[in-house]
Image (cartoon, rainbow, N blue to C red; front, side, top):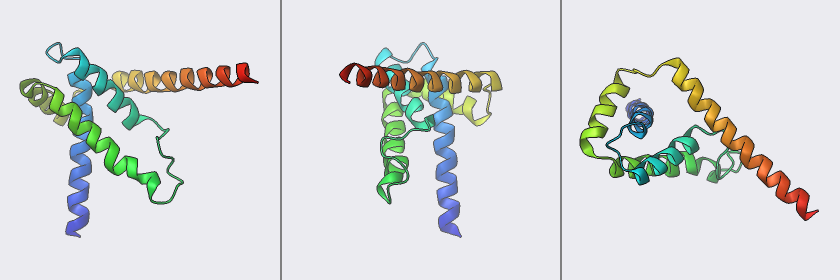
Amino acid sequence: MRFFATWKKRASLLKRDLLALYLAYRDPRVPWYAKVFTAAVIGYALSPIDLIPDFIPVLGYLDDLIIVPAGIYLAIRMIPKEAMAECREKASSNQISSRSKWVIASIIILVWVVLVAAVAIAVWRLL
């Protein structure tokens, strides 16, 4: 039982940090390169499409267990400590509106639609 409690707490902290990264992305104190990397991490973490599909045994969940937490860790390291501390505090109190959550989801879906369309056009031209 202790094992599951530990993992549940870690998952909760990852969720909080992902929310804090979204808030940090909007903070003017965060450098541009950290914002770009943060946007990529958030997009990948929330995307329904993975680098390694989940149906592949063992490897499918590797990105969820290693790549996403590593990306979150690196993004947090790029953000100034004061800004990240404030964003974590806001994320803990869950001060993000449901409208913002819908905007984030819409942007992620739009990016995937554009990528799929670009691949489809490239394949169409090759044929």
